[in-house]
Structures are given as structure tokens and as C-alpha cells.
Image (cartoon, rainbow, N blue to C red; front, side):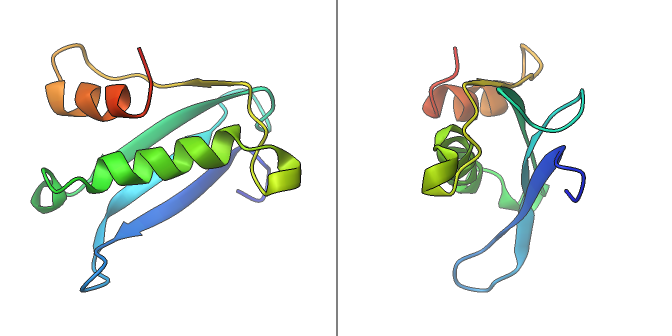
Length: 98
């Protein structure tokens, strides 16, 4: 994060504050600029609770918000997932990825 290549968040349960997983915005080729990638990983016990969708929604909003609004000002956001990973594909579709 100190090099400007990623922003990472721990996703915690709203009631217990226990870690559920994490979400990240990152760049593979130096500091985040016009394009960034969305990534997330959740513990198996956290899956199916909507936390990944909410975390992805918040991360996408932060990425696309302008710097004057406290965001990253990214113009293009990408994500990769396995074609047969329906749960992850559903998360991505829910936040506007095609």
C-alpha cells in the first residue's frame, strides 16, 4: 500500500467484529492509475452471507469515486475469476461486471 499499488481492507462481521475475509484494489504494473483490479477472498465460514457482495460494492465505489471525493479516480476496473466459480461470478455481476 505504501507504494500506491494496492489498497487492502479486512472485512469484519458487523456484530462480532471477527474477520470474514478481505477485499483489495490493486495494480499489477506499478501505482494504481486509470485501471485497477478488484480482488477478494473470504473464509469458507463467511460465504453465503452477502459480505463479499457488500465489500465488493464498497470497493468499486471507492475505486470509481474521484480523488476530490476521497476515491481513487479509476476509469476502468477489472476482475478475474474462474468461469465455473458461480459464487464469485455472482458477486462480480452484482457490482456491475460483465
